[in-house]
Length: 158
Figure 1 (spheres, rainbow, N blue to C red):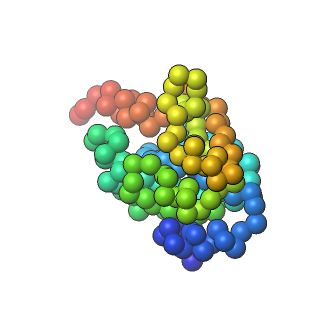
Figure 2 (cartoon, rainbow, N blue to C red):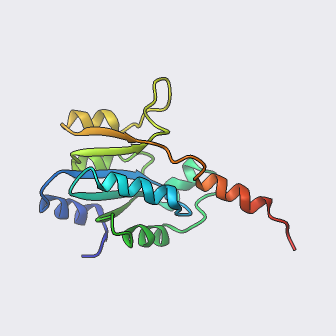
């Protein structure tokens, strides 16, 4: 079994792991150093890191004009990182199905989530109901796919 798994494969893999198991999810379109730092910090919170990867369809539904990189390529890039133990591609707009199936001990989101008055991850309540903990990692400033896209668009054309 490779590091890119179906949900059923990940469920079986998860059952054979000790703990704590960390789960995060996202689009990871145009993988950059902010993503890598985030994933490394998430992995340091537990014994294994599972990354739920939004499929092309769910990315397009949430981010018009995206993804720029196809899901198979994004999954392969994530799986190649030493801090990532498993990658599961999912089609839903939330990671609730992953949380239910994989029962993470720790669910991680970036600092752009969970602030008072700000957006809350829809999965957080489900994680805590299952006995897990939600952790918010600091946002890496000036590192985002949106900024990379803006810089590319600003380049002069030949």
